[in-house]
Length: 445
Image (tube, rainbow, N blue to C red; front, side):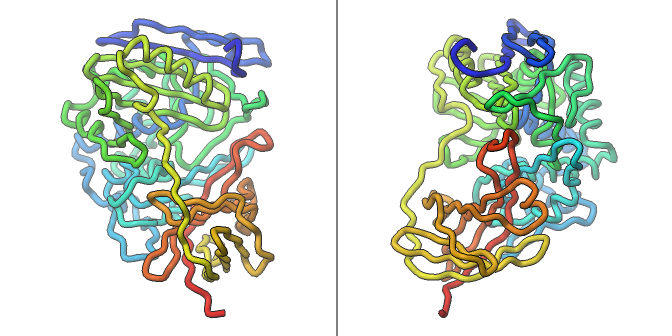
């Protein structure tokens, strides 16, 4: 805290069936001069996902759904878009980020209204690959799970989680929603340069918008490590049954998992505007620990977590917890011109790519070619390229000034995702990442 910019950090450790340590440092609200305490509730970002996954597994235990049901069965008539003859992703595959959906996040800052969940699914619920074939992290998938819970339970998903997860576990501080509603005082959120974030909402609340004190979050983690739980042992084991992500980690049902060291490490990180968090669970030791911060950037979170876990778990390494890196490789798309379009909810947008000696330029809707700022490839994508080009849709114009192409070459076609996004916070606020189907063919000109 003395050497790295941050607002505050809150830490908790639970072992066996109870908390054993809690500490808070710094300011929960810098304008008010209010210090962080062990009773301060933080927005926990993507640690919301194992909470939502717990609720979905609870609904499955109650017979309201099967994890192997097609997710569309429980979307009240909504269907995911397929440009190819892809199968129907199951609820389990959505939980695993293996449904075939694209990367996605959307944030609306007060007083602007968020995208409704169903609206987001209609616009961005596109399959980019065969369900089950590969891992791609997608917040939209957990927005879809919110809608599944709404359909099968007849309740608002946040209310279902409160009644059936937070309540039975005694997690009084916990809440899901854009603004905190609970008995604790909340931590304000700050950008990397110290600006205060306004309230923001999203279509994927079940992916991103849970709040908790560090002690309550550690106790939630402990409920997956031998302490009293709302789930049966089979469901807890299924949530930890992780398939490889390509980054050295596995992902199960809402949890990352690593089996590389002397202990299985189950965890989830969170990182978004004004938030950096981590929850780590070691089932064999009946141990859970979390670190919560209220400023954009992961340096403080990772430094505190590294110290904490090296003291608690012999043999712990940073590679045991997310986010894992995805190695780059050389881009091998041959030189030539490719023409096609980007599918968007506002209509098809013409796109031309010129590939020359490893360099790529894009012309959108007949405009002047723009050279890529970055060109690479990964195990999942034959071409990854970033351009200072904005898609001409109302959603993209709101806060997504860049275009990222993730494309694969198959049978003479370049196809994949065209993502409108923003580079970090820039003007002090995180923007959006909106994925669209893109398909290009060699030009005859």
